[in-house]
Length: 164
Ligand SMILES: [Fe+2]
Image 1 (tube, protein in one colour):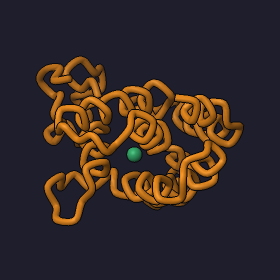
Image 2: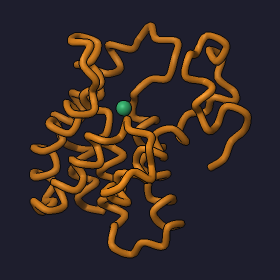
Image 3: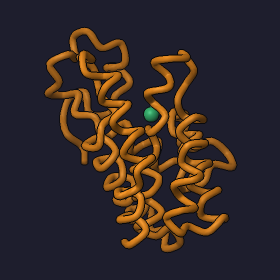
């Protein structure tokens, strides 16, 4: 997991997460902090293991989870969906963490698609579908104090109980 160690220690990575936390300091709904991205990373890997897919390593699954929301802060400034922005920002960090260009492209594609909840869409990679599912499963909606005001509650898999 030395590549994951490099991501977690990367100054730009920490700067993006700090910007997310600063932008969400008053937010009552789901935040896009380190806890959320670690939960998403672990769940992405669990889902890939359940699929029985031997081609996606733990490092690749974790990199996708850890980086998938790093551009969320920019959405508060521009109103533009953060998936593409996060994929763009991830490139430099992935390369500097020694991921190959093929791995970097695979992870960037999954990040750019993480808001698309059509998991069985044709041509979707296993990593892309697992990351998008993990992102939703990481939310603890069943015990969230803001659930009565959340307009996404009905679409959330954990709205009634914990699944993973
Ligand atoms: Fe996101």
